[in-house]
Amino acid sequence: MKLTPIRAFILIIFLAVLAAIPATGGFLWKGKGEIRLLNRSFPYDFTLRRGLDLQGGLQLVLEADMSDVSSADRPQALDSARAVVERRVDFLGVAEPTVQTSRLGESYRIIVELPGVTNPEEALALLGATAQLDFREGEKLVPTGLTGRDLARSTLEFDSTTGNPQIGLTFTTEGAQKFEEITARNVGKPLAIFLDEEILSAPTVQGRISGGNAVITGEFTLAEARRFVTQLNAGALPTPISVLERRQIGPTLGVQELQKSVVAGLIGLALVVLFMIGNYGRLGILATAALAIYGTLTMAVYKLVPVTLTLSGIAGFILSVGMAVDANVLVFERIKEERRWGKELKTAMELGFGRAWDSIRDANFATLATVSILFNPFNWSFLVTSGMVRGFALTLGLGVLLSLFTGVLVTRTLVRVFYR
Figure 1: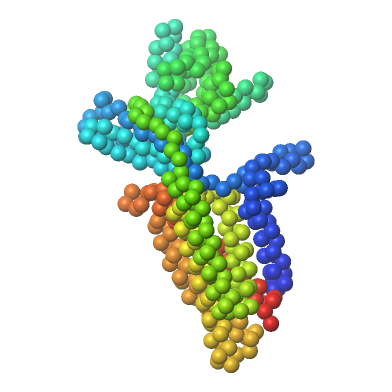
Figure 2 (figure 1 turned 180 degrees about the vertical axis):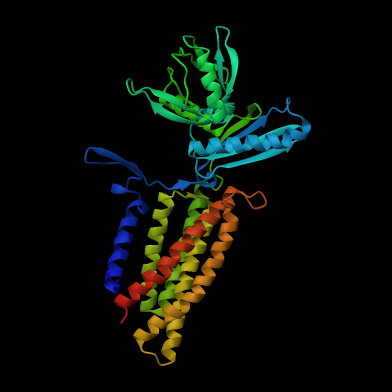
């Protein structure tokens, strides 16, 4: 089926209306809630995430105990500890955290910034625990040699009879062999399972267990089971870690500064609109309508991805707005040039969009190449790893992609339908 201008216009309006739901805060303008449909509940969260500089959060200074680590291996141990902490932060679901290392004399530290965290105790319990899994046998609880190093993955499961949470374990090939040998020699005896020197459970072995799978049952809550699974999957810390300092920090910008930034952005947007309408007339009005659709789509994407909005992210968004307008300027100037050469209006419009596309494409692709370097998706150590820089790159990259859609397709459709 051919996509005529009218059909394209209907599709664009449909997308704009659909995007307006998360962009404006959700159903009935509530950012978070659930919809019940066919006796099922569908949760949604359309709240806009903000970074540490806009909403504050928790800052932790962790110190690694290097007393049992040789001097030559301490830098590597600190990097390994940072990697484990980063994985645990990911399980917390914190948006755009910052985890970095610092050395002050013989003090090896990890500085963690968690935007929007309101429960510091939960964060400390997850980040600071060593997560050492250990299986022990006999009345004196003799270590078996089967530890968390033999674990491939851990999953949160539920008992089919009682519904209580339990922890599923899947061992590596070597770990599965160890587990089978241990269960074979302990039939009818208890096999104790410890995590960080605390006993989780001590079930009686009913028989040899092969296949490399096991289940830990115990009297722990859902939150505790989820935390244990997270710690086991993230890995054990290579060195003990203690909390040197913790503080709940407020937004670095402050409410007044944030309001000033918003006002400045609105003034800049108003000037752009006045320039487009004053210079291009009806074409400028259509470009402004396309810009409104761009803003709605962008806000919806920010909430659905979700994107954590920081001051640098706002800068990336404003820059992408400028690029969206720049695409329209290139097209409109090309249309005016074609008209000066004597082309009819319809022909001039089609040639203007077609011939301006090459310049728009090359400019935006060059920007996307820079964005990929700044975002550093593969965590290459020789590139930037700053959370603020990545936030800027993410908002700019999404903005560029959406501006290609609205600056060319949306504007072109509006011009075809309304400009005569």
